[in-house]
Image (cartoon, rainbow over all chains, first blue to last red):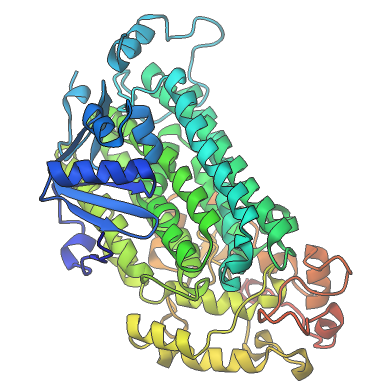
Amino acid sequence: MSNTKTQEPATASATSGKSARNKVGISLMVTSDTEAIVEVTRKKYPDAKIDFRDCFYKIERDDMLDWNMEEVGEQIGRPYDTDLFLVNMSSYYGRIIISDGRVQISSEILPSRFRD
Amino acid sequence: MAGLIEFHEKAKSYDWKFTVGDQRPKYKSKYIIPEKGRDPFRMLVRDYMKMESEKDNGTYGFLEGALRMGMADRIQPRFVECLKLTLPDLTNAEFQAVAACGGIISSVQNQELRQGYQAQMLDEIRHTQLEMSLRNYYVKHWQDPAGWDIAQKALYQHPGGIVSLGEFYHFNTGDPIDCIVALNIVIETAFTNILLVAVPQIGMANGDHALATTFLTIQSDEARHMANGYGSLLAVCRDPNNVKQLNKSLERHFWHSHKSLDALVGWQSEYGATVRPWAYKDQWQEWVADNFIGSYIDRLSEFGIQPPTRVAKAAEDLEWGHHTVGQVLSAIWPLNFWRSDVMGPADFDWFEKHYPGWHKHYGGYWDGYGKLADPANGHIMLQELPGLPPFCQVCQLPCAMPRLDQNEARFVQHEGKKFALCSEGCQWVFENWPQAYAGRKQFWERYHGWDLADAILDLGYVRPDGKTLIGQPTLDLTRLWTIDDIRGLKYEIKDPMQALQ
């Protein structure tokens, strides 16, 4: 378990508001369920940045994070659903969509759900 | 068994448009609000109840455990004393948000969004209950309950509470879409992340695990509120006629939220901590500048949404703003309902390392402050000041920002009366919406000409013996200042605006 603090330094571009990013992220409070979600994420997205911050994890990645509740349930060892996933989610950034057995956070500004 | 999507679609196929009562919007909007709009969480009451019940079981279970383990005794005193101001500030926000949801539901004729806001209204009530449970824990188990026992009443009279009132009234006054901009988009998507996700890390570092658990579960609901805001924003900004006023609203509420939240949360994070895992300005850069501006607002440029023009100025203010707030709140300690703490050598080192130049600008003040802490000296910092700073008519912070020697205060006339404003941003807000701010009462005005001791008695900031002050200049409980000590100072409050009219 790493305990790195990886805040990026202040940048002129970010604070001047000319820094559109494709990153998405989620903050999960530390619980046993979260430990399992983090493990699933590590396996599925080796390129994800996972920060442990004492009482929560912050996971960030370019473009998309997508969790399948069956995969999370297998890791935990019991059936799992999106409601239980959301109990552990403190925050996110990007566009979130909850559907059958899935939680997706996308950098897409207009996910399909918003298009009709 | 049918899944979430099928259930949600089926529920929508019933008559979500209510058929009883007056269907016209209760509060008219200057925006064109399309009926299109999506709740990304597809929230249904069935799932909501299951989720919140699970959350509450975990949170209240933890509080029970904290009691059994005597965890309140292990918290750094400085942290809980500062919370006496900031936690009631948060509860005020929740109260205002309950009313906000009622106004939005009554005004936005979009049934799917309404469902999301109905869940949000229940959330806000849940948050007040969680915060009151946490406060109950402090009242009964914290070493010095004075201040906690009267916290909400005390808050609404205190300058720091007036800052939160001035900010959170935006949730439920004015145009319903502007309320959504203030509540769901600016506060809940940008600023509550620092308060409710990052600050719990400070709580943990300073021994307050109960606060960390409570705040993190509160923010788990805020995540849905962000989605309500996004669904609403996307619906409204699809009509190009709305975009100009949306940008103006975003500019206004971003600036005001920066002033109030960065002052209070920055102060709690650094002046309420003995152990500091991070500097506030770095958290702001991450959660507000990168996550909110970079990954959210900037991405909406294809709809004409623009980042607030004052983002860079807000970031610049973070270097000194909350240090000046710490200076002012400690200088007025007799008027507080918590015990202040003296910044010592370890604090000096940390501040200088993270805010180079801090010692030059604030070190001398804190040295002098520490020397005046003992009532036997018969002197307080307020007597050292040439005069009291007026409070900004918009954000209600002292006109001494971002730093005393870089004071950006200015005065404007409106309908024959002079008003103080702390910054160019607040001046822009005042001049665009004078009717929203000109009538707001000022703290000094209320007590102009009063002896400080009488003001404290009027505020009710004394302990049960009727003589000992709740506010104290240090955490030391061995020799507390009394109302007689204060009366002996013969300090008269003078509203600085009286001389300027």
